[in-house]
Image 1: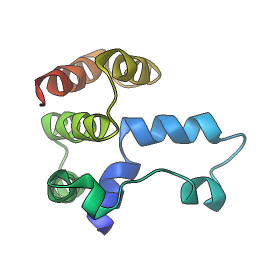
Image 2: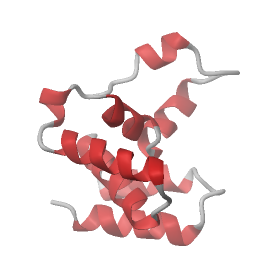
Image 3: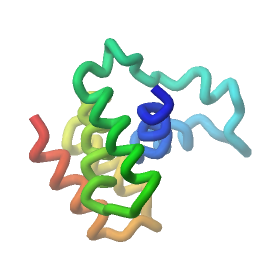
Length: 109
């Protein structure tokens, strides 16, 4: 569960949602109000997000980061256009990384 939460909190989608709510800093109240799916709501991707998070804590792997972010976007049922917008709000992330993430998103069911 902790690995799943780590993966969620380090995703573009959750980062985007937090930035929409933040004025000066992230408070406990903001974190408590985040709509983070529970294990039963996440379904089979719960384990995959946790596993990806664990691997990424040990090594940098842009392909796995893209997969994690794409899975989270699918979990939140974003459309391609919505996810493209979320990615556009991360100008400090290399365009090739954002493009790889969007491509991964498009290939997920």
